Length: 158
Image (cartoon, rainbow, N blue to C red):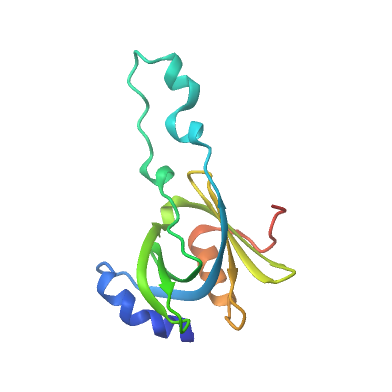
């Protein structure tokens, strides 16, 4: 178990569902989000042109937003990605939110000039980039996330 996973365990245990387990954890810096295409979420012009018809149902997983703070600990379970803000000492302190794994369409990871970066592509079409903090072993987290969601090891150009 990584040091980050050990630090997260007491914070995660009270919010885990029955049979849910912490698989991996990593500390990251939030690098930003490219917001989703709202037309894709709301039905776009098709909904406006056919206003007399009831709108198609919205997939709740396509409306999930990534909860972010500047520095975070990400805890991966078999069902969701848990986000915790880091305190001044660099330890996970407060639960910020969660993203169900079914809301993540793809995960890409790669090496850039400043270190490891993980890109999450949500089903909403939002793209979230996080930079793994120096000294963190990102490989177990990235491997577990790839197994859970799918993705690639080469980061596409931003």
